[in-house]
Amino acid sequence: MSIEPGVLLLYSDPEPFLSLEKLLENQSVPTVRVSSCQQARTLLAQSGTPRIVLTDTTLDDGTRRGALRLAGEAPLPRAVIVVNRWYDIRLYLAALDQEAFDFIAPPFRASDVGWVLRRAQLYLAQKDQSGSKAAAAAD
Image 1 (cartoon, rainbow, N blue to C red):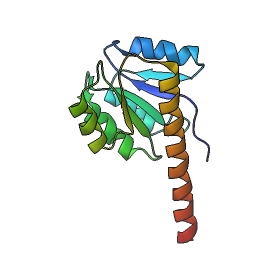
Image 2 (image 1 turned 60 degrees about the vertical axis):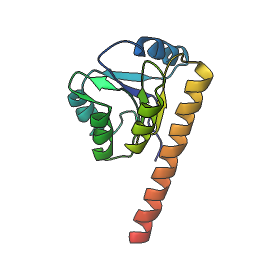
Image 3 (image 1 turned 120 degrees about the vertical axis):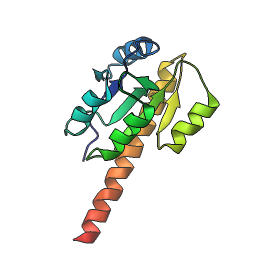
């Protein structure tokens, strides 16, 4: 199974996402943007949508916890990366404890963001491979 290209951007407040979205555009990374957990729920239930999710800490209808919960309920594994306006070690640790894949904050550099996205793709490929092995063993 291949990892769908691109990222799902989940945010309602444009800061700091506008600079991140521009960076992704400059790197030719396809993006799909939604502004609510409800919209994300619909997309995450579908195949063919990006499996890497960049979410804000606060949304119009929820928080990063809601986004993480939605990703956990999705039919395919998702890598959720929490985006904040600044580095906050407590928030970082809380996000990781809640099953976030990673946590990023400005300034966004192409090399750093690219590294995080590549790691997320590898993580998803490993999850797919372990899921395939488990399914084969069950047969």
